Image (cartoon, rainbow over all chains, first blue to last red; front, side):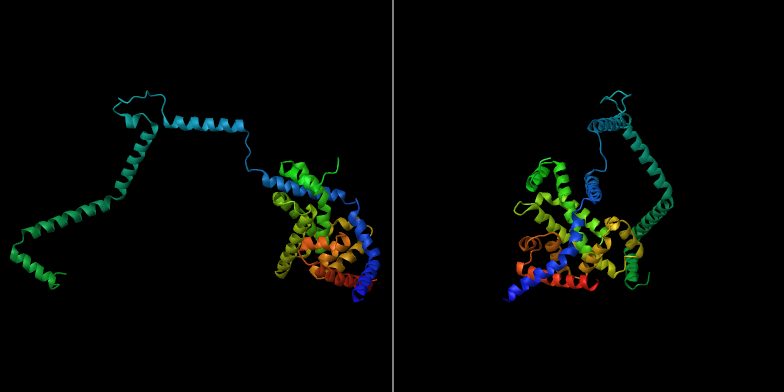
Length: 160
Length: 182
């Protein structure tokens, strides 16, 4: 009984609302906004296209041509075709390839630079090394008695 | 063009036919938009959700398992995306990200602007906004989209009994709200 009452109440409310909601429904189902809905579909689909599109698009033949050109340039840089290639050339390592020559030049420039930069330290190290050698020489020349005395002094912290 | 079943369109799209996807979009974009519009109460946000749902459909259509109707599946996505949008909007409002310029932009581009019964529709939309989200969703699906409780249950995952109760409360409240303003 209670259930039937509720059902009747729902029906009544729906009837009271139906006229008001009909305006909404008729507008919703009308063809007036077809232009908008065509455009919204296009916008969404264009977004999808943009997402699917890769950053760079190459024609395969252009891509192959580019790979060929790049590999040719790289190989030309590696080998100097003007000079004849022979294993009996005594100067092989530094004359047959441009890379070797460049590397040698680079290394020599780096070495020059380092010597210039570390020259003071180098001299200082040399002096220290030779003076330590002198001390070793002096120690070697000490007699046993003198050596004991130096040892005792070191032990009693008299030297430092 | 002959009418093609939804499931056949999905199969065609999955086989690489992009036109089939366009047909699906044309068939459902209005329904997606009006559901979102009813829930969100403005054109600008409904437009955003509709575009988002279309993009999701494109990406996820391969996961459609053909166990349910396509429209049920699409409505489920629309419902989820709309509810997520409402949640995000509430958070943004909490930090006052929206301003008046944004609101003006929303009203300028509204498709309702050229409609002679614009005021009546706006009154219904405002009344809908006063309903709790669950009641609003059931009311829109039942009254405007004319779905059965079983269909709504499949989409929302709620029991038929619960949906009936929600619909009854929504109906009562909407009737009161629309009558009191007259």
